[in-house]
Length: 492
Ligand code: NAD
Image (cartoon, rainbow, N blue to C red; front, side, top):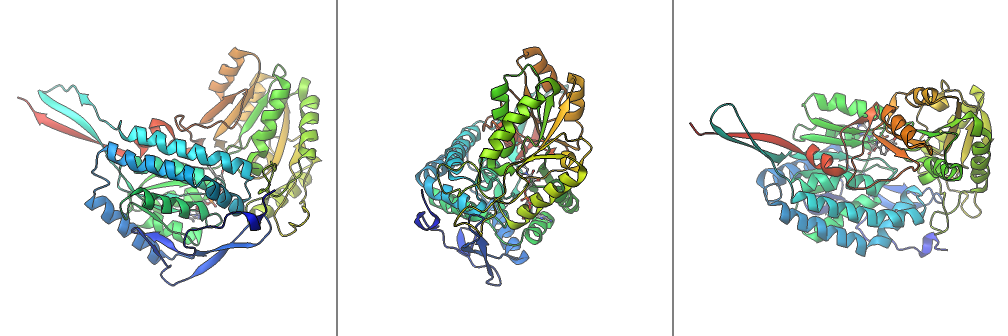
């Protein structure tokens, strides 16, 4: 087993911001330690940026966009840098995975899988950078008229704590491929991989000012970025409440916004499903990444004839899954990412009990030997949940599953669509017609049939309803970082 002390130490100059191609101190020199949820130890000092630093980063990005060359160069040249970054990410894979794990408690087994996925995403968007094109359009008058797809300008990218590396990539890769410049504000809880990626972009030859990274107090810096008049677009991933606030702030300067927000996703198991497979998908649907995943299948809807069997198998597996040191390559389930998360999950298990749901397993903290300072919480399953309960309606964003029985297909669809959210959904059935019928009836941006939590850089991802708007991944993502110009030429 790898212990924290044996793991590779971060090599980026700690406690600094990346602005205009340089590592700089925060304007007032402030730093704060990040605290690892693995054991409560302080990992590295991180620059505590200020609004003055946001301003400096935006100015650098503005200057880099307006003067080029990044925003004006051909897609093939930009692709070269993105391909080089993908290679460097693979070169430093172990260090990057380690940073994710100590920063947010993600089991290193999964962090190691995310690194090549991210390299693949950079390569995918490097390819798309060479494909950006407009169209010629027939007009009613004698003209030669065509469209150009041009970058939007300066993009403010604000990302959450739960997939720091992957969710930075879903923004940086398409934004940079399209020729934009970026100011990235990672979560204050998990900044370590963003700093590493900035270092690798500099090594790959990205011109100064094209990517800037500011760390520090989330709300203050995020608001300064959302309000800054020289920012053209905010690309946000995070909670629905903060998303609303950013939209209000960004409206003042009419910024473009894309919003990847919260979820309360249903995972529906019909009686004709392949049950063992469905139980596995239900288990990883909620407990992958400790439930700290926007698509968490946090509402398990089970048809009554198989309710006891499905719940019994799931509870058995959850009860046997003890949280452990995420740096151990065998660990499937690590600590929650930060203290507020731990308290929120604890509070929701109290609410579930008070609402009268049946606590079937978990519902309490866990103390692995030697890691008493960590934020470990047991996988938790509530049975016989009523859809009106708060634990069935509100995003907990932790390892807490609400199981709801249903009778008919119509009931399942109504229950599945019965929250404000619409991020993702799962359907488990052996009836191919039912599978596609239900997928079409679900109000969600992603539907998985007989599987769950699959992602690919080529497949668009995003929300319906209060889960947001805009799409990440796929050609749709590249489009959302461009704007269309129509050029008319008189031929009369
Ligand atoms: P959060 O909304 O608290 O924070 C997200 C980011 O916004 C962080 O960088 C934070 O520092 C910053 N921020 C906080 N207050 C701000 C403000 N007032 N103005 C501007 N920026 C501000 O979210 P979180 O706790 O980091 O992440 C969990 C949430 O993210 C969950 O709701 C989850 O569903 C959502 N999420 C969504 C997706 C998706 O793709 N739809 C993916 C991952 C996470």
